[in-house]
Length: 332
Image 1 (spheres, rainbow, N blue to C red):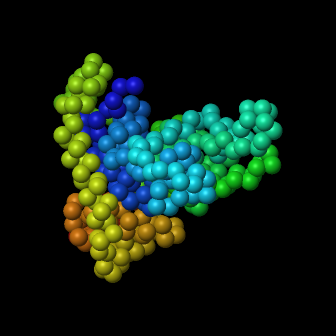
Image 2: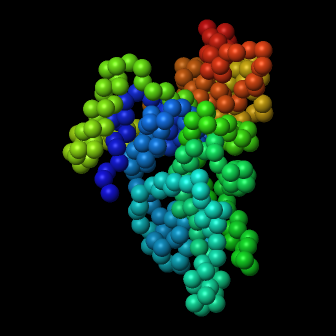
C-alpha cells in the first residue's frame, strides 16, 4: 500500500487540522465531526494524522492491543509488550451490528463446538480512531450502539450464549455532507468538536491542491520524503503537548469565561463548558503554553459550540456567526 498523504501537505482546512490535532492530544474531548463539501480532504486528514502519530505499546497477541501497563482480562499471561501503529478503523455504512460489536466465531463453533468470541470493529479501534464517513446516514440502531460505547468506553456483547466485555476507547471521527441528511441530536452532542470544511475559492489554493495531489499520486514515496521534516515537526508537537497537557493550568477566571459564553448562547447542558475547557487546554499544550488564556478560548469557541446551539426559527444567522458575535460582546 502507498504511504498515506502527508498531514503537513494538506492545503488550507486549518480548523479541521487543528481539531484533529487537539483530539489526538486530548482523547477526552470526545472526537471530531467534520461537515462540508465532498472532496475537501476529510478522510485524508484523519489517515494522515494517524500515520504521523508515534507508535503505541501494546500486549502481543491481545485482540484489543491493550497497554502493557493496564492489561485486560483477555491478554495472554506472560505476553510481551510490542509496538504497533495507532489503529484507524473505518466503519462502513453497510456494516452489520455483528461486524461492529463482534460475534460468535461460527467456524470454530462448528469445527470444535467451542463458543469463541470474534472481536469486531470496536475492538480493533481501541486506543485509536474510529472513522465514520457519511455519519449522518448511519442507521439509528447503530447510532444508539455507538452512543452507549462512546459513553462507557466498554463494549458489551451478550448473544448466542456469549457474554463478553472488552475495552473500547477510541477517538470518534465522523464526516459527512449536511445536504444529504442531518445527524441525530443524540450522536451530534457526543462529538467534542464540530468543524466546517469548504471547497477552496482562491485560485492559488485550488492549484496548490491539484499540484500536490498529482505529485503524490505519481510518486507517493518521493512525496512523503519531501514532507517528512514538516510531519516530524508536527509529531514532536503532539508528543510534547501530550506530556505537557496535565500541567496546563485552567484558573477560575477562564472557567467563568467558559460558563458565561455557554450561558449567553443558551447551549443545552454542561458539555459545552467541559469541551471548551478541554479544548482550550489541549490548544495551550500544542502552543507550548503553561496556562489557558482568553486567546485560546476565542480560537476554539466556534468548533466547540456550533453544534450545541439551539435553533431559533426567527433568526437566520448561522451558528458560527452567532458564536463570533457573542465572543466579540463578552471578550472585547
